[in-house]
Length: 151
Image (cartoon, one colour):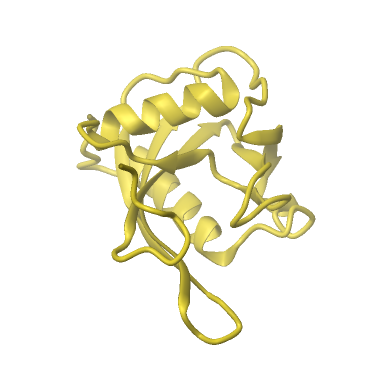
């Protein structure tokens, strides 16, 4: 039996992936709650028995049809949403990976309604969450910095 995503007993492991192409990053528009309509990084929940790396690759492919090569762990985000009474409605601990784009154009899958390559100068227009901006910066640093641990 799957644990409920709303009002969970414990955090759910989420996986995100930052795909960089020159001076742009791949963003998707969420089609379902908790962030329906919002632009974010591709990703979703890790499945039981699935490694974090496998989850990152699966989610990227399911949401955009893209595949990438080597991955680097860029960082983590805690996404906690409360209801009007203050109870925890959603709680995700998100592990974010980064990769460089190779080929192909994104084609939105069932969990997203759109995908776009977006430059940092346009993040405000996409109302991108501050934590996503932080992870994108960390991904750029991890992919270009010395000692990046590629997986």
